[in-house]
Amino acid sequence: MTKEDKLNKARQPYQTLQGSTFLYEHCWNLLKHSPKWLRTIQEHRPKRGRLETTSSSSNLEPIDLEDEDIPHVPIV
Image (cartoon, rainbow, N blue to C red; front, side):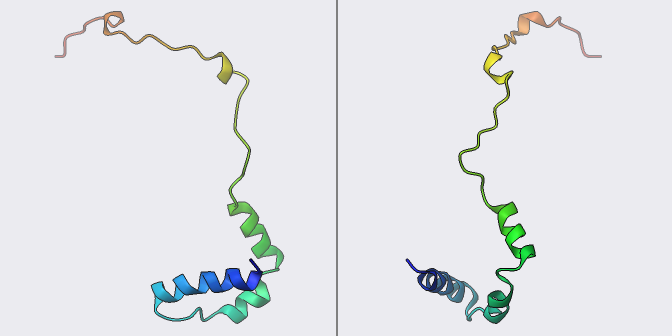
C-alpha cells in the first residue's frame, strides 16, 4: 500500500464523519516533516515489545487477608 493509498483510505472516513473534505491538507503537506510534529508523533506512538518489570515483581507472594486476623471493634 502506497502513501497515497493510505491517505485516500484516511480521507474517506473523515469525509463521512465530517461531511466535508479535510480543509487543511495543504498545511499538513507543509508541516508533516517539521521537528515539532515528528516529536509529537514519537511521543504518542505506542511502545511495542516493552514490558515494565521490576526485579521485585518476580518475588511477590500472595497475602492472606482473612477477617479472623482483624480484631472486632464496635462502631460507636
